[in-house]
Amino acid sequence: IEHVWDELDRCVHCRNPLPRNFNELWATLQEEWYGLKDDFIAKLYHSLPDRVQALREA
Image (cartoon, rainbow, N blue to C red; front, side, top):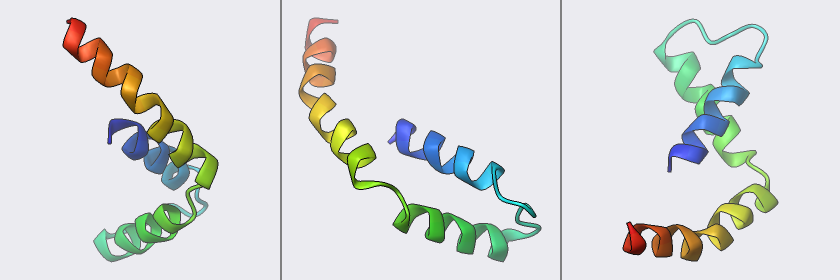
């Protein structure tokens, strides 16, 4: 989840102009959410077993 929020944050901050209020921010986040690349999500998904294993070993 943190990686997705970080990516969304980067995308929002690259916008010109930046959102000026809550409604604009919400609309921007929705646009960026639906614009996330499939390979980005797939990479996170495929890294999940390694992350779970690291938690078990911690």
